[in-house]
Length: 191
Length: 114
Image 1 (cartoon, rainbow over the protein chains, first blue to last red):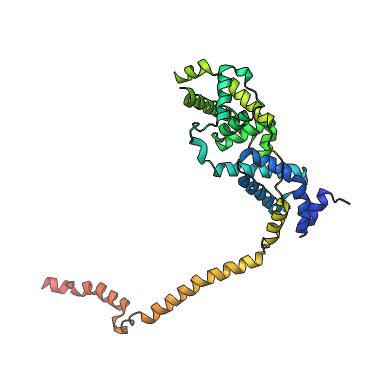
Image 2 (image 1 turned 180 degrees about the vertical axis):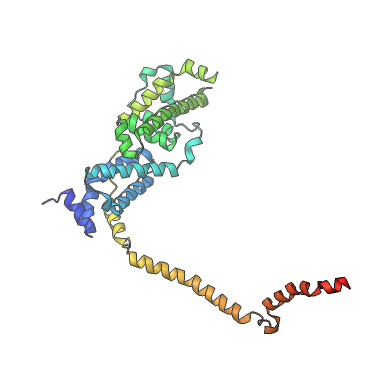
């Protein structure tokens, strides 16, 4: 019979580390998907996920069971991703000159006929990834959670540990920052 | 100036909207690399168990080294320092002599009248 989450957690807390494995198997796909939003290289993604699980194991005593384990774990995941972004800020000031051919073509199509530039195109995905890399860590986190994952301000406050007004302020700044990055892209490419 | 030029050929709001839409349309994969759980569990099992007493005794042993070093230096200083001055040159006695010397040199009232 499959053990429940509460039973597994209780067993881990009593020293049975093997009971942690079913939790890892159950929730790793979600943690990997979250980490892939913030890190490009697979080695970095795996490092982030490993760190999330190590933290979860260490801090399991702090899990009081008031909210589902998944929510607690996702908070850890988002905060670990934010720490990762803060420690890897070096690419922010790089130029847009090295856009790939498909990205360049997608932009050209957008400039000539904006409606024909498809959102589903792979080039658009690459381009948005590149633009997000130019945002500050807080800006990137807020844009990802608020605009891309379409979460509410309250949810973001819970996930990040920031207050609701702080999330709003950071969202406002992040949108302005993104517009600046897009303006820089256009300036470097066409002026 | 530049922003006006950009606005004349590119709608940044629309571009932002399109790019956010593109990011929504391509959610990241949730695939777990082969053997990840095994590697993670091996790492978790290899982690040393934190024992408060072990940490405390390790800290005490680390503190013992500088304490012994300071003790050795103090002993060496005590043994190699120059010998103490003889009892005749007692500091308190010298201080007293200096203070009273002025009183001894001061002329007495009878000497002044003479």
